[in-house]
Image (cartoon, rainbow, N blue to C red; front, side, top):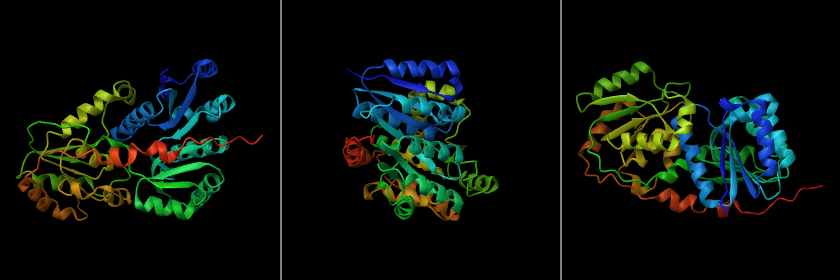
Length: 357
């Protein structure tokens, strides 16, 4: 029998909701798969990760009931939700922590939620889906080490070389794997026949931004005599609740939009991946950390006409002209799905970690 998928978002938090959830867990037949840490904001890169996690879970655990909780919902009332689930969880159930930038002291709400899950479920296998790992504060790193290394069956997937090296040094007791961002599993799954025109500047506007707004505006003007230039971001103005309710449509509309450009320039990791889903060449600029400079190393030789890392923004115009001169078919293979995500379930394994009474 196929399992059901249930989403619990922070906007829906009420004590009565938790009571209903407890009742549902007690009465739902079959196995359960829990995903903690889904996004509650309007960043489409994070929403795409949720979409891909859900699709992967449905495909690989079709008979499991899938319960997806956003970080705020998990964190409310001193993690009351986790205490409810801890009392009801079965050894045949599975726990996943959402992918992204959660293993860091830059975003402590997500990091604290992740630590709490690891602490409260020491007798369950926990899989932390692909992460960027970065700590600025030594004290926070030491706290994370003490919690993650104490868990006897914690699997930590790292989505770039730098994060993997950090995990090998700091989280040596965990089961570590280097694994690409889950949204890469969408590359090669779609082919677009849209006429292509213009340049899209997909630039972030937050604390991870490396270049100033003024420098990006200067770049826009520098490129405007080549073609029309549009400025945007993967974080959009649509409320998160509306995105989640229409996630597949919002993402597909976004990828279709990206397929209408000749080239995309971005300092967003998921701006890079979205471009490749759309089959559009992408110039990848620097960000304030290693996420992009290390992340672009995932792309194999057959992607070389489509992914160009540009550490010097002053050479962007030259790179755009090269892309415009290239003869491209705007199609990429499903490399990441075939090489990685079709095999992930087997790599994680189905062994149950036996509870010590």
